[in-house]
Amino acid sequence: MSFRRVLRWLFWLYGVLAGVVGTAVFMFARRVIQPPRQRLWTTPASLDMDYEAVQFPAADGVRLSGWFIPAHSENGRDGATVVLVHGWPWNRLGESAQDVLAKLNGTTPVDLLRLAYALHQAGFHVLMFDLRNHGESAAAPPVTFGQSEANDLLGALQFLKERSEVNPQRIGVIGFSMGANTLLYALPRTDSIKAGIAVQPTTVSLFARRYGAEMMGILSRVVLPLVDLVYRLSGGPGFSAIQPAFVAAGAGETPILYVQGKGDRWGSVPDVMRMVEATPCAVSPLLVETMHRFEGYQYLVNHPKVAIAFLEQYLGN
Image (cartoon, rainbow, N blue to C red; front, side):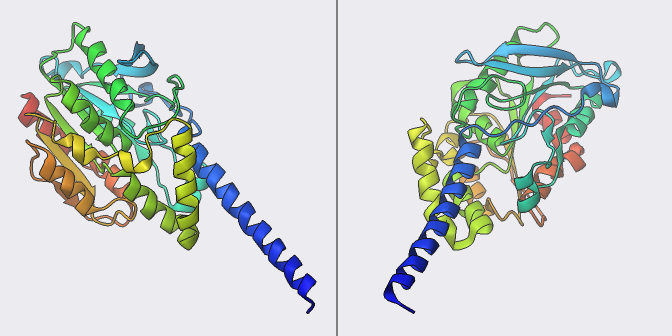
């Protein structure tokens, strides 16, 4: 084989590799900065729950959309209310697991409406809402995996305080993944959260590394630094700057229950345990047997009595 032919082959291989890397960087950076939105596929009426479609501003003015579901009238708990905060890139209903990437990475559905129903039946008011850049809420890119989204939760709390049926001294929050990070980032800025459940929060740099390795293998070592660069150029804080364990120390006297799946291939038990150790009033964490990250999310949906018992203990009966 001639030297020129070898060069042509090398240039061709380089071009193919550059194209693969470029495509991967574009796909993942776009999903990080402003993910594709999942449409709402049902409403609380499908489970015979009355609800009110609501809109309210985040603490920094971003328009947010959601549903307020009043407690089952026979089991009311004197205004006790639970806010559900979804993950990335879900919406208020959870994760539909319908897009192409979801099918490739093993994502399975997470049905937060079932959890809302259990809380409603147990006598809690429930607020479900879309975080910024998700569902029907306004765009305010980039996603920051809890930092900016804390403004959304603070806006939700202010909205609830203005409702006569809500007891502002009896508000709890359940956050999933990015929603769990959001809970932790909001806690140092408010004393309105009387109890919180953080389901699989994560240090973003660790999540990105483990997720990237599973999806792309050794190629992730090239792709992820480029995605992080594009993310920072878009105004994001950078993956290494999103450290929930740092802000968990500011949770004050709010009791926090951490839930983490042992079989989570993208997050990790040691990562969550660092958050537990940093949280002043963390209760004993719930480490559950799972085969995938999404089984950890679904745990409370399948076992709502765990959440209800915790909320009863700290919000009162």
